[in-house]
Image (cartoon, rainbow, N blue to C red):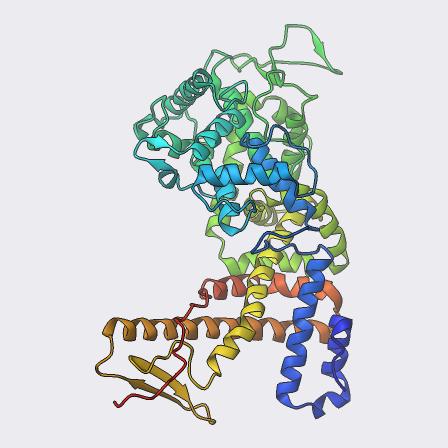
Amino acid sequence: MKVNFAEGLIHFRQAIFAPQAASHAPDEMLFNNLSALVLDFDLASALGIFNPLPEETPRESHDASRIRTIRSRLACLGYLSHDSRLPIIDPFLIHAIKKFQHDAGLTEDGWVGRQTWHALQELVSFESPCHVNHWFTGNCAGPALARSIALRLHVLGLTDTLTFDDAANLTAGLQQFQSVAAFLHLAEKDIRPEVCPATIDLLFDQDLLVEALATVMTSLPKDVGHPLFSFAASVAKVELWLAGYDVTPNGFQGKEFFQPAPGKRRGKQRLRIPLGRQSLLLSDDSRLFAALTSYWQDHGKEEESPGLAQRFADEFPAFFRMIASAILSQKSLPEAEKSALLYQMVAKQPEQLEAIWQTALSLGGQMWDGMGSRVFGWLHNLQRQPGGKTVGIGRNISRLVYHQAMTAYDIARQALQAFPTQIDNIFQRELQGSDPRHIMMRHDRDLDFQVFINTDGDQEKITQFIDTVAQTSRSFNATCRIIGTFMSTLSLFISQGRTGWAGLILTLLQLADRISSLGRQLPAVPNFPATPESNVLPRT
């Protein structure tokens, strides 16, 4: 009996646990199982469950979510006049990609491969660290960073309009930022109202800005027009958005706060402003108000939540202390504990996996922004609270499941793709790159390796060959461990009756930390120099 690869995991399970499976030769079983695993990975990608980043420009793509995200980010940076949200690769998108690649100093191939994707992550995402010095030449910011600075100033509520070629608007935004930094006691970081590494480094340090907003000890400004309030509201939007709440980080809209007139009603309730408090309230018909209310409800303050949301301008440090706690928690939480936390939640209700995936895909570009890593701290802190709210499957959990499973999937997929080439290279009679003029490595039929070094050979080439063989060995070792770890755990799930892509996802979630750790040990397979056609062993 042979495994029918076209039937995927279900047939794989039958092949492993059927009585006649014992009659298979070990190598046949290994490669049957491996081939079935490869097929299931391809099937998961074809169904849109996982959408890995293509290495080369695809002629077409079913990955609507990623293409929409690319469009959204290029539009945010002004490389597209507007975000059409079309999930297609058209000439306008290709032109915009090439323009961004030119400004970012990347190869202009018109497709967002790994380097271009990481550059977009760095300049647009609020959770991916931005290595600002990389984008500067001396004190001069590169064109891609200059656009990102204008975007960041607007999203953080420091400019009223988003423009990429208005020097006066840029200067005004940096002056507002300097004023906020001074109030938050960040002026010692040499913050000046100009584009320089120190100022821009702080502007892009989201965690530090949150920490500063959480530790405000002095009285808030009496001037209700102080940029601190629009800045705090805009940063709150970003953080709530990253946590999966229904709010858009689009800067300060101007109508979100209001000053109540004495004795007048707003909505159904008469507003009562305690003496000595800041008379600036958040409008109860804004999306920020709704998101803040939901946030405080999730943290056990159901009755107080509307009031806490409305008095945000006066009490925002309390909100940011919660955010800072979640950031600190997710940073200190070991990777194994993160995987266990998420796996335990999903494993208890595996029937929710389809709903999780549909929710994640419906979020479109949002599931790629920030990747939900802050949600780990949010989830961990909620579970630690006595009598805390039971967390259901929602936007934030869906994003987190997608991120964890997708990361593990991508690493395992790379290992599966590299395995045949690595096997072929290692089991050649003479190792690729062997050269009788310098050094050769070969093995006999028992796989006993022999090394022949020409004492008159080029020492640099001999050293280079040895280093390359060592790198190849490390890569092959990591590949085998990833595949072995994955197949053994997946077999366990299959034996429990968890077949199909649900079993695949549960496996990825359980192994996310181990696969990610092994993935860091997975160097690229090196390219050996061409082996001379005539290999005559030298005298040693």
